[in-house]
Amino acid sequence: ERMAYSTATIPHFTLSLRVDMTEAIRLRERVLEPLQARTGQRLSFTAILARAVATVLPHHPYMNASLSDGNIILWEDIHLGIATSVEENLIVPVIREAQSKNLGQIVTALADLTERARNRRLTPSEMTGSTFTISNLGMFGIESFTAIINPPESAILAVGKLVDTPVKSADGFTAFRPMIQLTASADHRILDGVAVARFLDELKSTLENPYLLI
Image 1 (cartoon, rainbow, N blue to C red):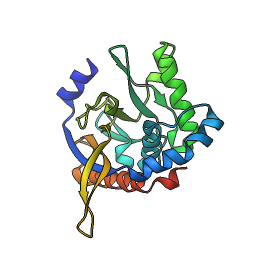
Image 2 (cartoon, one colour):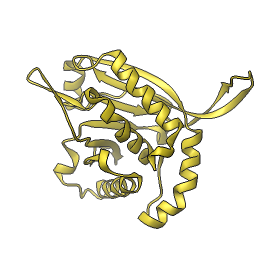
Image 3 (cartoon, one colour):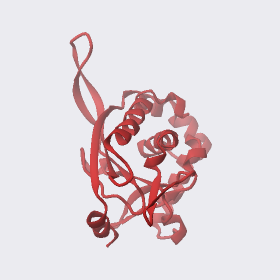
Image 4 (cartoon, rainbow, N blue to C red):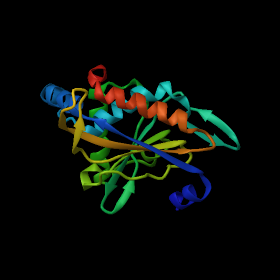
């Protein structure tokens, strides 16, 4: 119902780009064991993405905004919604104040929310109030897709699966690189193409050089 309302009332536009995940894979391999020893959880690419988005969003305030009675509200805190599939239903548990959480804290929050979502033990407040949403369908083999904005948010990020893709390097050689496609859908009343492109560009460079996320 909300999604039908969203597509009918929000002027959506989408931009997408591909990100080389070579370094993100290396980072995950390096910190997997120490982080598991500390948190008891395995580091997922969704957690790395959530940490990257929470790091980049403060530089792009209109991506973390809402429209209310014709006024644009720029939210100071980033409450990150992570779209999760639970037995045919899509629910969006929320990592509160994600901008102030380190990688370990995001891993822990995500594992806790996902576990309780599967057991239907999330409280209504843990599924509302998100200011930006990430929807990852990579685990279903989807390479790229367009997500519908979760009102009253101004944007949503759709994440596809890792695909080994031939990429030509500067010296003319072609090598296969693990790429993902990121697609941002945005509300044209709040954002324009340049603002969304800048956000995606910074997110891409953060994921391609992810060591600052630790």
